[in-house]
Image (cartoon, rainbow, N blue to C red; front, side, top):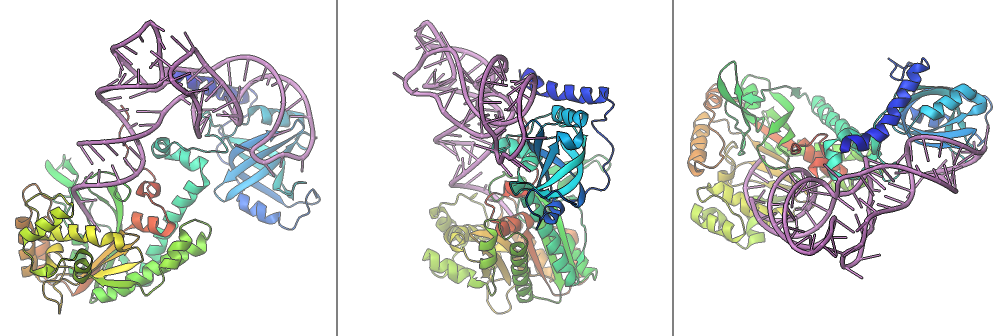
Length: 496
RNA sequence: GGGCCCGUAGCUCAGUCGGUAGAGCAGGCGGCUCUUAACCGCAAGGUCAGGGGUUCGAGUCCCCUCGGGCCCGCCA
């Protein structure tokens, strides 16, 4: 059984722990002061002559052992911290028999160690630390993945992300990049006087989008609660309250499958800007995308995909009109004059299977997805959607039957959605009702939120709102194809 | 939910026509004082995802289950 397979490997490493304790050495010490990044050592080696060991600068480093090459009297140990790899050189002559022999007897790939020594360049030209002191900082009793091929098994990489991270520079770098880009989004918005806020995740009725919510239960209230599917409605209440420029970066939950571009929990950015309209917001969005793409390119010029995104995200971005583009790609004419039944038939012909009681807006979305989205490879703003598709947006000031909205696409993937916000409480109430009627009982609609309508009655300033999936943004900027590769712990089925 | 593919040692992978399980790395023992996928020698390591079936004989063929991947469907 698995236990005995493992115990053979783990037993030997466990024995080494006992061996150390017997020798009075703690295999899991409390701290390791004074350490510097391995990259600093590598930098300090610059300009040194290979093989020259005279007056090397002293460094203390700590990290994980990736490989050990032992040659009898000399051993080369590849050490790795977040800043990168560094070769340690251990010599019998420098360390003495006891420490040298014990180190080699006890250290394995995967162990966390600290070392102090001089920065030199080896005779073969490798930046190295010529070690005078070495200490085990934490013994790994589980063996790490193979040093050359790493961890390839897709399932293990998802289920045991810590193993993927410790074994793969690329994985570590990808998640560091995600964090840095998220911080860059915050900095961009703070520079423009947007206030970061937090709104509830648990709410009685999830609304602000059309999606199936997760349902849970409050013991205290003895009432059902749902997990939010969007950030929109609470943030707009804050505009009513006078906060003027707000944003939230937060987890949203939709009760759906995991696939290459969808995850049941994902991170949304939404921002709301009082006294601005969707044209102002489009300018802001264009700046945000191009700024992030350039930052990514400056920080990680070697990551494949980053250069392509930086090249593509160069303003001004293309714009297309939702209706004209859909008519052009599909050959349908007078799209806005078609009734629900006609739209349903066209959507069915295009291969979409929607519930028969779905609203007209859903069919229009389907047609657009089918005929237009795959063609939107270059960064493109899609403008001015039909009213039926967008219940929370304001009617277009000059185009009948439309709202003031844009969506942003890159490589066929939606990367942003914005509109001039509907702030007329009477019209908002009507649109909620129309949504509920258009969608059948089985169908998700934008749930009626009576308190939101009440909030609008107090007066919400004219405003523009913008939403974007952080996960997808990171995918686009880093050239990653699967959302699972930018989520640290994606949902996986529990093992039987 | 439907279709296709995958699951063999801790890791990366071979395994022919159905004939009784292999390599490299890691680990153990021995050797080696400038290697970097170090090298050389010796020994060890397996519920072939799980269950059932066909067969004299199944890692291999068939069925079911579990898990994962890709495509489609659903969904921002």
